[in-house]
Image (tube, rainbow, N blue to C red; front, side, top):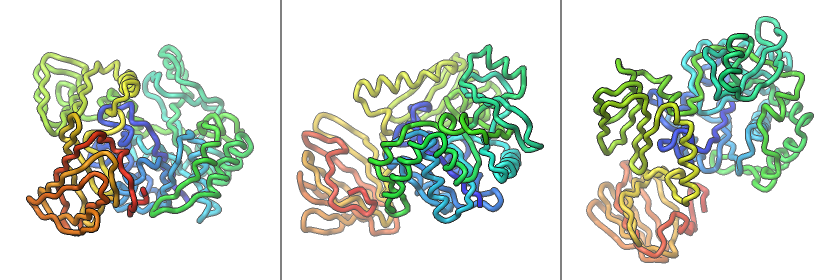
Length: 470
């Protein structure tokens, strides 16, 4: 059976400030009405004979994965949590072991979570050709037929034909300079390396054991100590961290004699920068892509995305990327957006948090928005979903005041448990054990005012938590 494997890692840097470490681009709605992750699992679900997707992600994103699957009514074949990042070869090994638990003949369709595919019929045809090769024990990479000289992708050079379905891989080529990329395009027989693969789960593990035994050994030990928690499969951190960090390309595909490529032209993009998002988006007559409250005068070839809170106006500019969020705004020339990582590096070096979190942070119980911060105080707007509850917790350095704006909250404070209705307030003293719960059918919204000597999110001592975070 065919088991989709969705690799959902990523540091959230290339589309900053919209993407952050706690919400990388695969979970954002960039094109259409669904996130790239949701589009990936839905695309896979429409393939014939396919099973529920296996997702490999970090612990930081586990609830986001679960909620986005639920939002599109998608089951899951396992949400496997990587305790540390070790690149694609170990991640795919974890997925292979998960698939083999229920299907000894499992075939894996490996896909990054953050790619765009516009021609689904062409993709489906390529999967069919790859399945034919996988039945002959080939490990298949999907190569995107290039239509221009691109320096941002690695390339695959095709070798001998394998019937009508694909080719042997002659070699993998690193990202070329522009002149070399043009030579590849002119010569033909080269494809962009998409990062998508299809092969037998057991066949992949066998080749990995042959060419990278240290990876297989570490992953097997980590898998043997795995545990289940709600919908998640937790991998032993110590054992998994001992694995070498390596990509599937280096660990297996460049070394095996069973590597094949299926070329495909399917409107593919990895949306690796703001300029690539502009290139695949619909434009107006002036070549602009505008989202939100935007007024443009004599503006051409630009992507302008306004936040919910304010208007953006442009006059007499061209080829700009302008991305506004509540706590950060990016203005860049379209040909310089790859350098957004330099901004992120400076944020890290300065010990700032704008590369880690948005002002509005999503949690499994709802969300909070930091609407005001000053010396020794912070104000948050908190929304708790129906039936959800924050952890039973206490703080060492801060007290809190809660004012309910809408709904009815059940409050635990010390030995007391009581309801707090709209326009009512309460005080949570420093060190008090407390919890906020919504037993109703509508969201509870409240304003929280924190005061104290330290207001960081790590000043939380969780005593009990329905989401396994205590």
